[in-house]
Image (cartoon, rainbow, N blue to C red; front, side, top):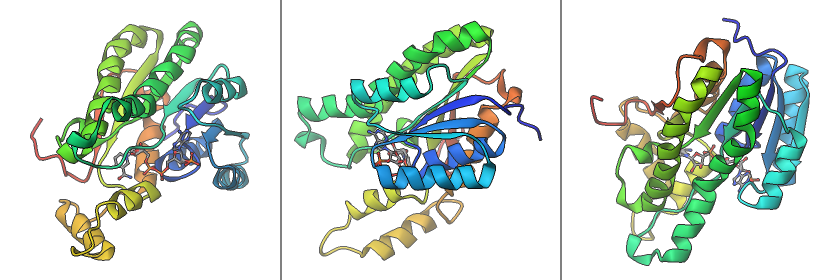
Length: 259
Ligand SMILES: NC(=O)c1ccc[n+]([C@@H]2O[C@H](COP(=O)([O-])OP(=O)(O)OC[C@H]3O[C@@H](n4cnc5c(N)ncnc54)[C@H](OP(=O)(O)O)[C@@H]3O)[C@@H](O)[C@H]2O)c1
């Protein structure tokens, strides 16, 4: 299927590794030029080179932290008028809500809620004026599945999802869609770090927990980053103009509800 995005300009944050990288690669394969941002230069440059070599597309790496004003300004300066925006970054470690004070909550909002909203604010009017835009936020299944130890993620990411739901209805008439991908367990560095943080000295080992986690999923495995990339590419395509404000679970059936 032709996604119809050849020559489109895409801006992707959190795109040197994991799901963000897979998303950048997926749309570069469809002919988009990509600006990719992350904080660590080494992995970012390696990813840029790999995408360039495989696809022949223009790839612009930006070393920047999307949680800061300066970082967002640098990212937007490299691609001021994107047709496609992926909002992605990191998450926060699980914990006990009794240990989280105001500072921890502010950090969570500054990482998982405000950067995507501010990036949308900076780009959505231009997309509407040009008559095409595709915005996708990588969120988490945690906004649908209440896991108490992931409270910072549940809370801050729900704020993003709530905001995006309203904005999505204002932009779709101008062919600008806004959707959220809700990954379940995806095999990535972040997933490994998340699990490593849950290992206890007297409990099961990391490898035992990894296998048990896969086995507990209805699919019997972790998701693959390229499965996220493929969904992203379709949501960015010319075919997805009638899909907006949606929260799409990609979790192997892990969410236990019918609706
Ligand atoms: N993997 C899962 O199973 C899973 C499930 C649900 C939700 N999630 C969430 O989905 C998101 C992506 O996860 P992933 O597994 O793909 O992670 P990953 O493999 O660790 O990749 C994260 C990417 O984001 C970049 N990044 C992190 N913080 C950033 C910042 N402040 N500014 C700019 N770039 C930043 C990282 O590069 P630098 O570190 O160099 O900046 C890296 O390129 C995270 O928010 C995670 O919590 C993951």
